[in-house]
Image (tube, rainbow, N blue to C red; front, side):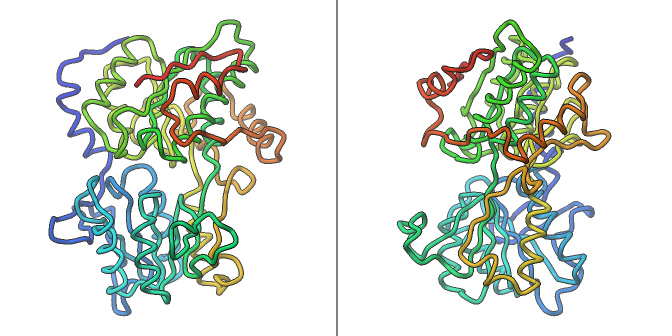
Length: 403
């Protein structure tokens, strides 16, 4: 049932701050400061410098998503292994430039960083520039790719790639598939998804396509007789930031009958939280990390193993396996490595019809390769024709692209 609308969108900015809960940057510095005692900027001692550094993507540090998952993995590993650590937010927030990111990297190195973990594809140019200049420092490109000194050679296996860079990528189509399948099995018939990157971010594209495939499969498993309606949009999302425009768009979806929206893209989730706050019978699917704590109406989250995979890489680095396991390589992680899935902890599992037993059976089918969600997407997925072709053989869903 719809609640009172008064003041919801006008309070959007406040919701955004509450949802992120992260550090802030000043205009004069690339390093981050924080007003929250629960989010330490660094280890308590810097006698030998901060050996492990995290340079964040756009948005806030504690975004409930990609930045947070990456940072928490680095922080937990460093604390468990007696390493000093610090995070750095490039200046200018969502409008950060490559020069802002380069400044953050260089500050981290000045402060003693031996390894720098950085999430997000926007890091490529800055990481390449600094990695070439500092061959003695190691770099972990989360959601990235192996880098060459010349960007033209990045995806040419015959060319030499930077020995001090390693990358982690994820099979986002699997995580999206799990979420879509669960939503269809739950009984939702009108679903939506808003995806970051404006339609040109490969990770968000894979999430979107996997989500629709999962809805199709879940509807088939449930024996749905009527086609499920799915709205997909990459509008108001190029910077992955929350905005009143996005909140207004998603509020209109909920008002028109959309029952659940996949909020896929950093701080964009706060726009969806602002929109869903007007209803008691509408829901959100979170992304990257378990976002149940952000709202009681987050029914599940399509997660990546950010925390665990960052800890794994740092362990390989500290254990002396960089040259054998990491140098110039990109690892593509999915269910087989327990790196994609849905959170099943009490308090996070909020499905009432779709059971954990059903989910575990699905997860194992993807893990062992019996079910393989398709991750092949267009260069620009923000194209109604692409969606029409991609879903032409699906019999249980109708996809509408909201541009």
